Length: 98
Image 1 (tube, helix red, strand yellow):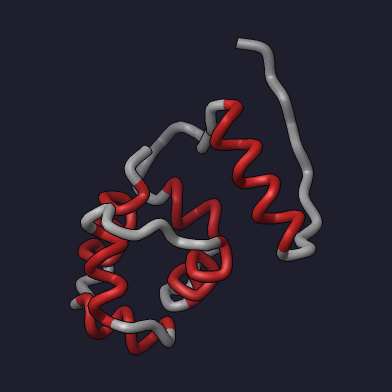
Image 2 (tube, one colour):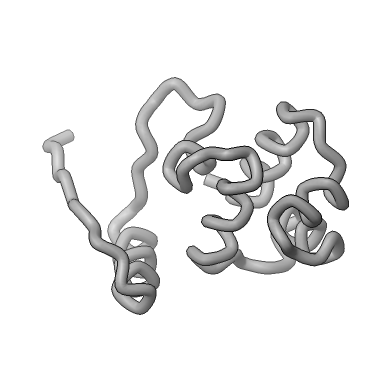
């Protein structure tokens, strides 16, 4: 998944300009632009701010417009878990066989 493209898709579906989203999320407009172009990687806290601007949950933000459930490869999942642990977020993991 390209997070930048996903963030742009959600923003455009809500008919917001980057500046409007930045104001709602308490972020800088140029940072939103960098995120959408893949020039910056969002932290979990940033994703929470962006999701809260709509309002959506972070999983819903990342899966917005996709009929299938959100999944990560093992390396991306481990990075996400490290971020969540650092931010002291309670997590649940559900593993399904392919």
